[in-house]
Image 1 (tube, rainbow, N blue to C red):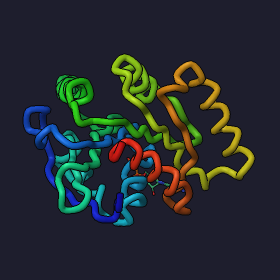
Image 2: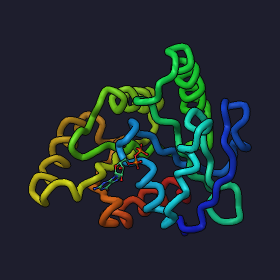
Image 3: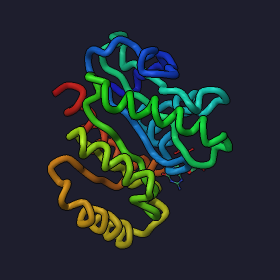
Image 4: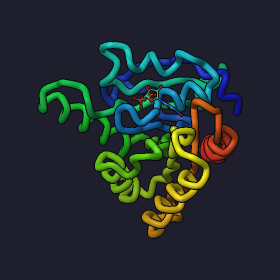
Length: 198
Ligand code: GDP
Protein backbone atom coordinates (compact mmCIF):
# COMPACT_ATOMS: atom_id res chain seq x y z
CA UNK A 1 0.00 0.00 0.00
CA UNK A 2 1.11 3.54 -0.64
CA UNK A 3 0.94 5.26 2.73
CA UNK A 4 1.79 8.60 1.18
CA UNK A 5 -1.75 8.77 -0.18
CA UNK A 6 -3.21 9.09 3.33
CA UNK A 7 -5.83 11.81 3.61
CA UNK A 8 -7.79 13.02 6.58
CA UNK A 9 -11.26 11.51 6.41
CA UNK A 10 -13.27 12.27 9.53
CA UNK A 11 -13.11 12.61 13.30
CA UNK A 12 -15.62 10.62 15.29
CA UNK A 13 -16.62 11.23 18.91
CA UNK A 14 -18.20 7.82 19.38
CA UNK A 15 -18.28 4.39 17.76
CA UNK A 16 -21.68 5.22 16.28
CA UNK A 17 -20.17 8.17 14.36
CA UNK A 18 -17.27 6.21 12.87
CA UNK A 19 -17.22 5.62 9.09
CA UNK A 20 -18.77 2.42 7.73
CA UNK A 21 -17.24 -0.60 9.41
CA UNK A 22 -16.05 -2.38 6.28
CA UNK A 23 -12.70 -2.98 4.64
CA UNK A 24 -9.71 -2.89 6.96
CA UNK A 25 -8.08 -0.40 9.29
CA UNK A 26 -5.12 -0.16 11.64
CA UNK A 27 -5.18 2.01 14.76
CA UNK A 28 -2.28 3.86 16.38
CA UNK A 29 -2.21 4.39 20.13
CA UNK A 30 0.34 5.67 22.56
CA UNK A 31 0.69 7.63 25.69
CA UNK A 32 1.00 11.36 24.98
CA UNK A 33 4.44 12.47 23.92
CA UNK A 34 5.49 8.91 23.02
CA UNK A 35 5.97 10.00 19.40
CA UNK A 36 2.75 8.74 17.81
CA UNK A 37 2.02 11.82 15.67
CA UNK A 38 5.59 11.90 14.42
CA UNK A 39 5.42 8.19 13.53
CA UNK A 40 2.20 8.69 11.52
CA UNK A 41 3.72 11.68 9.75
CA UNK A 42 6.87 9.71 8.96
CA UNK A 43 4.93 6.73 7.64
CA UNK A 44 2.76 8.92 5.40
CA UNK A 45 5.62 11.32 4.52
CA UNK A 46 3.33 14.20 5.43
CA UNK A 47 4.57 16.68 7.94
CA UNK A 48 1.24 17.82 9.23
CA UNK A 49 -1.14 14.91 8.80
CA UNK A 50 -1.34 13.78 12.40
CA UNK A 51 -1.26 17.34 13.61
CA UNK A 52 -4.93 17.40 12.69
CA UNK A 53 -5.54 15.02 15.57
CA UNK A 54 -3.83 17.40 17.95
CA UNK A 55 -5.83 20.50 17.13
CA UNK A 56 -8.00 21.72 19.99
CA UNK A 57 -11.26 19.86 20.11
CA UNK A 58 -9.93 16.86 18.22
CA UNK A 59 -7.80 15.32 20.92
CA UNK A 60 -10.74 13.36 22.26
CA UNK A 61 -11.86 12.11 18.88
CA UNK A 62 -11.10 9.00 16.91
CA UNK A 63 -9.40 10.36 13.78
CA UNK A 64 -9.65 8.47 10.48
CA UNK A 65 -7.36 8.73 7.44
CA UNK A 66 -8.12 7.02 4.17
CA UNK A 67 -5.43 5.43 2.00
CA UNK A 68 -5.91 6.21 -1.67
CA UNK A 69 -9.25 7.06 -3.23
CA UNK A 70 -10.90 4.00 -1.84
CA UNK A 71 -12.29 4.45 1.64
CA UNK A 72 -11.90 0.80 2.55
CA UNK A 73 -8.29 0.95 3.80
CA UNK A 74 -7.74 3.29 6.71
CA UNK A 75 -5.31 4.48 9.36
CA UNK A 76 -6.82 5.54 12.68
CA UNK A 77 -5.23 7.87 15.21
CA UNK A 78 -6.62 7.15 18.66
CA UNK A 79 -6.68 9.88 21.29
CA UNK A 80 -3.82 9.84 23.75
CA UNK A 81 -4.19 10.25 27.45
CA UNK A 82 -1.85 11.88 29.79
CA UNK A 83 -1.20 15.54 30.05
CA UNK A 84 -4.59 16.83 29.04
CA UNK A 85 -6.05 18.78 31.91
CA UNK A 86 -9.61 17.59 31.76
CA UNK A 87 -11.95 16.48 34.53
CA UNK A 88 -11.90 12.83 35.51
CA UNK A 89 -15.47 12.42 34.26
CA UNK A 90 -14.39 13.51 30.77
CA UNK A 91 -11.45 11.08 30.82
CA UNK A 92 -13.82 8.26 31.74
CA UNK A 93 -16.04 9.26 28.80
CA UNK A 94 -13.08 8.99 26.37
CA UNK A 95 -12.10 5.69 27.80
CA UNK A 96 -15.57 4.36 27.28
CA UNK A 97 -15.67 5.47 23.62
CA UNK A 98 -12.18 4.16 23.04
CA UNK A 99 -12.90 0.76 24.54
CA UNK A 100 -16.17 0.57 22.57
CA UNK A 101 -14.19 1.22 19.41
CA UNK A 102 -11.47 -1.28 20.27
CA UNK A 103 -13.88 -4.02 21.24
CA UNK A 104 -16.55 -3.67 18.62
CA UNK A 105 -14.91 -2.41 15.46
CA UNK A 106 -14.91 -5.37 13.05
CA UNK A 107 -12.63 -3.74 10.45
CA UNK A 108 -9.88 -3.13 13.01
CA UNK A 109 -7.11 -5.58 12.05
CA UNK A 110 -4.35 -4.55 14.39
CA UNK A 111 -3.04 -2.01 16.82
CA UNK A 112 0.25 -0.12 16.55
CA UNK A 113 1.33 0.78 20.06
CA UNK A 114 3.90 3.58 20.07
CA UNK A 115 6.34 3.77 22.98
CA UNK A 116 9.36 5.91 23.67
CA UNK A 117 12.27 3.42 23.51
CA UNK A 118 13.62 4.93 26.73
CA UNK A 119 10.35 4.44 28.65
CA UNK A 120 8.62 1.35 27.27
CA UNK A 121 5.67 -0.53 28.79
CA UNK A 122 4.09 2.29 30.74
CA UNK A 123 0.89 1.72 32.63
CA UNK A 124 -1.04 2.96 29.59
CA UNK A 125 0.84 0.47 27.37
CA UNK A 126 0.11 -2.42 29.70
CA UNK A 127 -3.58 -1.52 29.79
CA UNK A 128 -3.66 -1.54 25.99
CA UNK A 129 -1.79 -4.85 25.83
CA UNK A 130 -4.17 -6.40 28.33
CA UNK A 131 -7.11 -5.30 26.27
CA UNK A 132 -5.56 -6.54 23.02
CA UNK A 133 -4.83 -9.89 24.63
CA UNK A 134 -8.46 -10.22 25.78
CA UNK A 135 -9.61 -9.54 22.19
CA UNK A 136 -6.83 -11.58 20.57
CA UNK A 137 -6.03 -8.44 18.60
CA UNK A 138 -2.52 -8.39 17.13
CA UNK A 139 -0.25 -5.58 18.31
CA UNK A 140 2.84 -4.12 16.67
CA UNK A 141 5.02 -2.16 19.07
CA UNK A 142 7.08 0.75 17.76
CA UNK A 143 9.94 1.60 20.07
CA UNK A 144 10.42 5.06 18.70
CA UNK A 145 13.00 7.81 19.25
CA UNK A 146 15.59 5.05 18.73
CA UNK A 147 17.98 7.79 17.61
CA UNK A 148 18.13 8.92 21.25
CA UNK A 149 20.09 5.75 22.12
CA UNK A 150 23.32 4.36 20.70
CA UNK A 151 23.06 1.20 18.65
CA UNK A 152 23.95 -1.17 21.51
CA UNK A 153 21.56 0.22 24.11
CA UNK A 154 18.77 0.44 21.50
CA UNK A 155 19.25 -3.23 20.61
CA UNK A 156 19.20 -4.22 24.26
CA UNK A 157 16.05 -2.16 24.91
CA UNK A 158 14.42 -4.10 22.06
CA UNK A 159 15.57 -7.41 23.56
CA UNK A 160 14.28 -6.46 27.00
CA UNK A 161 10.81 -5.58 25.75
CA UNK A 162 10.78 -8.80 23.70
CA UNK A 163 11.63 -10.92 26.68
CA UNK A 164 9.08 -9.19 28.91
CA UNK A 165 6.40 -9.91 26.32
CA UNK A 166 7.49 -13.45 25.49
CA UNK A 167 4.22 -14.96 26.68
CA UNK A 168 2.41 -12.85 24.06
CA UNK A 169 4.79 -13.49 21.18
CA UNK A 170 2.06 -14.96 18.98
CA UNK A 171 0.15 -11.70 19.10
CA UNK A 172 2.89 -9.12 19.50
CA UNK A 173 5.69 -7.95 17.22
CA UNK A 174 8.22 -5.29 18.17
CA UNK A 175 10.64 -3.06 16.29
CA UNK A 176 12.88 -0.04 16.71
CA UNK A 177 11.78 3.13 14.96
CA UNK A 178 12.96 6.70 14.58
CA UNK A 179 10.89 9.43 12.99
CA UNK A 180 13.90 11.73 13.11
CA UNK A 181 16.11 9.32 11.11
CA UNK A 182 13.39 7.58 9.12
CA UNK A 183 14.55 4.30 10.66
CA UNK A 184 12.21 1.32 10.52
CA UNK A 185 9.71 2.60 7.95
CA UNK A 186 9.97 -0.50 5.71
CA UNK A 187 9.44 -2.85 8.63
CA UNK A 188 6.37 -0.90 9.75
CA UNK A 189 4.97 -0.83 6.21
CA UNK A 190 5.39 -4.59 5.86
CA UNK A 191 3.41 -5.16 9.06
CA UNK A 192 0.64 -2.75 8.01
CA UNK A 193 0.47 -4.28 4.53
CA UNK A 194 0.02 -7.71 6.09
CA UNK A 195 -2.86 -6.46 8.23
CA UNK A 196 -4.57 -4.26 5.65
CA UNK A 197 -4.19 -6.54 2.63
CA UNK A 198 -4.18 -9.93 4.35
P1 GDP B 1 2.66 12.20 20.48
O1 GDP B 1 2.12 13.03 21.61
O2 GDP B 1 2.78 10.77 20.86
O3 GDP B 1 1.92 12.38 19.20
O4 GDP B 1 4.18 12.67 20.26
P2 GDP B 1 4.85 13.59 19.13
O5 GDP B 1 4.95 12.85 17.85
O6 GDP B 1 4.20 14.92 19.11
O7 GDP B 1 6.33 13.70 19.71
C1 GDP B 1 6.59 14.18 21.01
C2 GDP B 1 7.99 14.81 21.05
O8 GDP B 1 8.98 13.84 20.75
C3 GDP B 1 8.17 15.90 20.01
O9 GDP B 1 8.98 16.92 20.57
C4 GDP B 1 8.89 15.21 18.86
O10 GDP B 1 9.68 16.09 18.11
C5 GDP B 1 9.74 14.19 19.60
N1 GDP B 1 9.97 12.98 18.77
C6 GDP B 1 9.03 12.21 18.20
N2 GDP B 1 9.58 11.19 17.51
C7 GDP B 1 10.92 11.32 17.64
C8 GDP B 1 12.06 10.58 17.14
O11 GDP B 1 11.96 9.55 16.45
N3 GDP B 1 13.31 11.03 17.51
C9 GDP B 1 13.47 12.12 18.30
N4 GDP B 1 14.73 12.47 18.61
N5 GDP B 1 12.43 12.85 18.76
C10 GDP B 1 11.18 12.47 18.44
